[in-house]
Image (tube, rainbow, N blue to C red; front, top):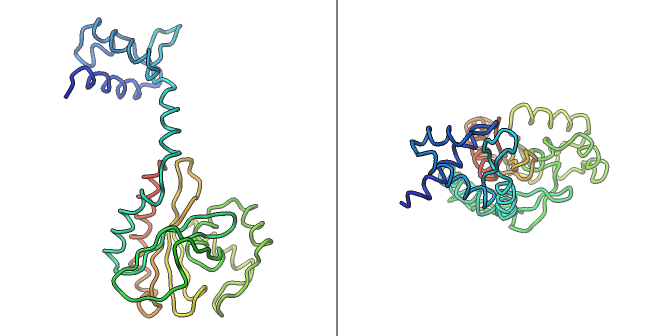
Length: 251
């Protein structure tokens, strides 16, 4: 390990913990450095924009270079790649079909699918679009959209029946969305495809906005209400883990 680099990174971490900044004497004392050594390290970090010095207080604080790097990192995040290990974990635990679905202009787009170890025939396919009102992933995402957007989507696409169990009444549907927000997950039992039941959890991005959802799908005979109750904490936990990988801060 390069000692000077280690010290510089330690200084950055230290300064980031103090919103009001730290003086060179404070930095030297906390890291057991001479004042001269601390000053040289701080000056180098200032030169590169990682640390800045307040002209009035002379204290050092985190520089704006971090905002630039953070923006670059967040733009480069591939949700599919970031989510994959957690999807595999979910598949291994449940042996059921697992989906990662993205929200795009009022519809759901399947961007990843793990088949599990048990046979299941569904309409889902990577790249295929799905309705938002009768899928567990769609309802979960819609539940966290602003109410104006929810109403706009209902007015635009309606609530057409896909099966005899599809919720087609607006008031009932809005209550369903409220229930999802309160409980942190959603499910549908044969609302989109006969014989298929799904349970899903939301995925949020670094700005706290709903961006995707993860789900478990299986035949209704296996995914009974009792089984869904068992899967609830698991799917919620996976949704939160993926969200954190995308930079979401769960307060």
